[in-house]
Length: 104
Image (cartoon, rainbow, N blue to C red; front, side, top):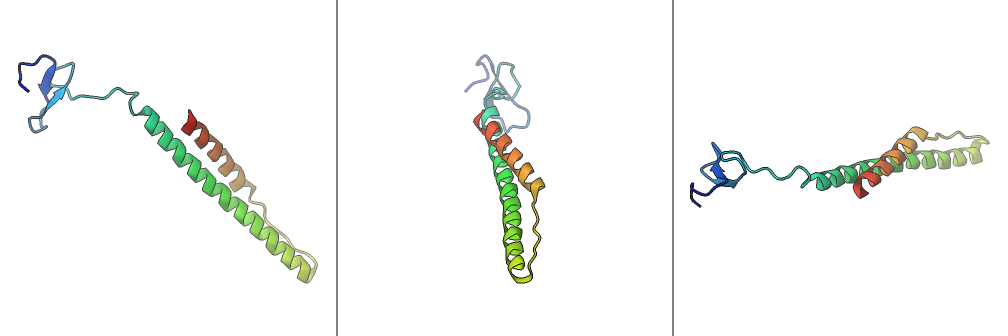
């Protein structure tokens, strides 16, 4: 490529490589929307996975304590269990939000 080509320039400090640009001397920038879907989907997938893990932990603790309370009730006549509703609700909300972000 030669310096005489219109619409082309070098970027200072780039090692002399030529970049396509509307303004000579400016680095080539991809359109803003080019990576938006990929970033949005990646963030949605991450939120979905984090939400699913939180939800699974909440359900595991709740079910585990319920089973333990049932075993204790068989032995002593009474048992208590924990419902981790905070983890379950937060996990479910994050999972739904992540799914929505991933698909939109």
